[in-house]
Amino acid sequence: MIHQEKVGPVFSGMQSEREGKLMAQTNWYAMPVQEVLKRLDISGEGLSRAEAARRLEKCGPNTLKEEKKISPWQILLGNSRIS
Image (tube, rainbow, N blue to C red; front, side, top):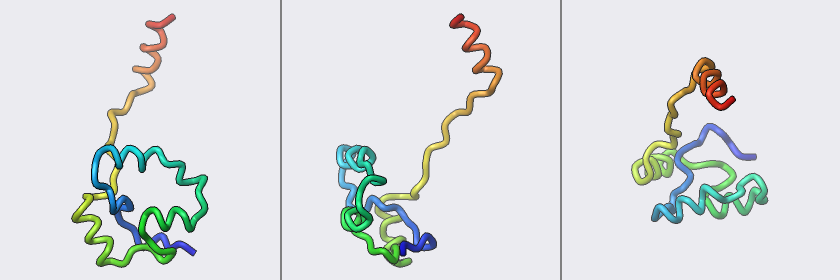
């Protein structure tokens, strides 16, 4: 069983922008669990606190950039311009 409480950036081996793009394009959901664990160099128990700290230092926080939100009014106005 994979434990969710042990988390950290998973792309520990990310060396370049190209490799990062390849990792992002991988269909992780379609792979057997053991293959995912092997590719990400993790165990089914998750990352230890020390390993999570090391990866955080190396890769930075595991966050998504917040995008500018579009209001319903902007969507409506955008649609009316097309028609």
